[in-house]
Length: 119
Image (cartoon, rainbow, N blue to C red):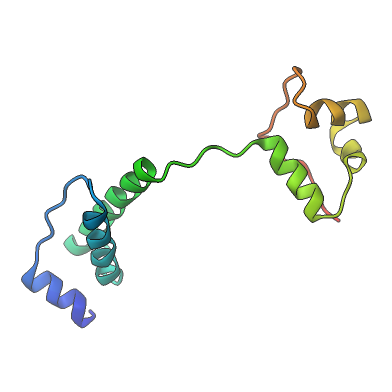
């Protein structure tokens, strides 16, 4: 057990509550850092897990992230791999289907299905 963790368990009991300010957020992060080496199945580790959930909740409320556009992700990956839309034909079936997908046409596309984009 690190000295910091020992000091925390002997001198402090963190009051767990919803994080509502930047100051509370920073304090929670610092506490998490000190508890990181807690022994699994210990009270301290349980506190660490709950505190991590509270931090996650605060981050989601304070720094919301929009879901990425799947077509933008496909275009980005094509660019990274120095590929062109025609390289998707083997995966999607036809040039017209590639065009439909990349141009957000009405026909639904299962974005849960992986599209192999290897070089």
